[in-house]
Length: 301
Image 1 (cartoon, helix red, strand yellow):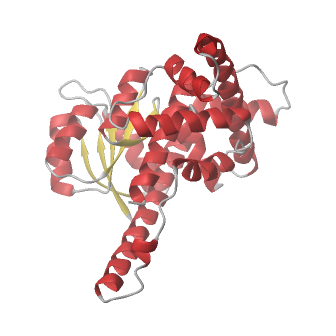
Image 2 (spheres, helix red, strand yellow; image 1 turned 90 degrees about the vertical axis):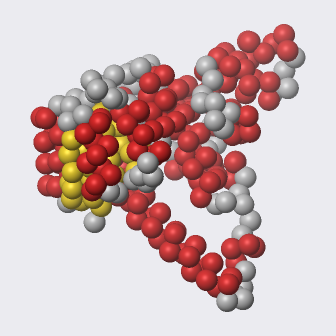
Image 3 (cartoon, rainbow, N blue to C red; image 1 turned 180 degrees about the horizontal axis):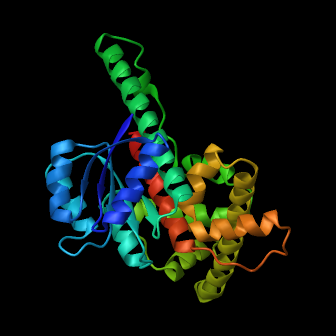
């Protein structure tokens, strides 16, 4: 069973999170703290598997706390919670090591969905580590050498199952997504995500258009990607309506989309309403896709 630490300057939020975690059987809360500095001390003493931490705290914010914990050797997973929607701050949180993000005010269903996924990934990671250890022992004993013979997958080979899960692998916008993610992995490993306009123009140049047409083609790329991400949102929302505990819904809904957008799309589908133009957070979708592909590439090294 997973152990959790909670760091949030709001006592009510700490209590709500602890209650949700323990009542849902997600794990055991082994330590809580009301500030970043106190959180450092508590987390280093209790060593939980997962830290649920507020982004904004008066003495030391969540990002700084995570950085300090890493410097001191703490190796737990991080889930950020916050009511702010500042994309730059959220981007910095992901770069600092945050794997999931929960929007305040706290919603029981969203917390359970996100932390269930954390639990699932922890189990998978543990199993993979056990397999790697076994393969290493086989190699030392003069075994089959399977680990060295394993072929590393390309960026596109890693992306395809993800896009397939969301039902968009055949969409024209998915080709643009692949061009963008390949470029990011090749040139922006530690630099974060550039502005969207720059990313659209990167995909535009991949279509071999004349340089004078790049800006115009970039706008076409934007429309293709927006349509594709909206299709992904609709597909994931449809899965959630059929089975809220479906692994695909549990993984992709909270990770790739804003919770309120998923909820509105589910309501629209359930009530047979005429599809609205709607909105979708393209920057978040690209950032999460980039980080997930990077994580899978690292795990294969």
